[in-house]
Each structure stands twice: as C-alpha cells, then as structure tokens.
Image (cartoon, rainbow, N blue to C red; front, side, top):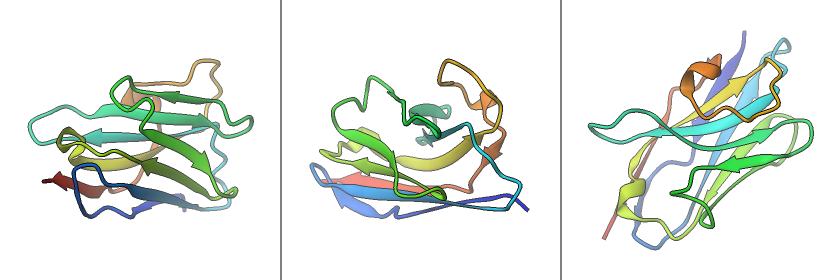
Length: 125
C-alpha cells in the first residue's frame, strides 16, 4: 500500500524557518517526480516545488524562489526547507508523487497521482 505522510508543519513567526518532510512507503511506489503543493484559505491548491527523483532536477514557483529548497535525504524522504517565511506562506502543505515519466516537471496537481494528507504551516507576526 502506497503512503505519503507529511510532517513538520507548525506555527512560525514571519522571517523564520521550517523544514517539512514527506515520508514514503510501499514497495510498489517508484516515483519519477516528488513535489510540494500548498493550499491557503480561500485559494486553489498551488504548486510550490518539485524534484525529479533520479537526477535531482528541481523547479520552484516564482513566489518561493530563493527562499525554499526541495531536496532528498534518502530514497524515501522528500524535504522542503522554508526560509524567510512570509505571512502569505500560510497554508496546508501537501506532498505529491508522480510515477509517470515526463521531461517537464509538472506544476499542476492533476499531473500527480499520489498525495499525502497535508500539514498545516501558519506564519504570523
């Protein structure tokens, strides 16, 4: 059974840092791309960052470039390091996986076929 489980979300002050983690399980799960999305209150789910599992190629939303970093710590975990946090970063953050091959790192949620339950990140003064 494939599982994606996010952790690390909490309340943090503006300008602070957080590291989110996505743990994967299931012997049948072989991702091509892992990604992070987020959904703020009253907003649609939006792309944050993605990493191609095999070669480490990354892609970031313009709103987080220079502040966030997506990386792997091993074959099972995908991490999102968030720095210089802003109030507009407040959202539920979701881990997503894509098993199909593609040259372009997808930025739409429909292109991912595995999802975690989400972890809440709240950024306040």
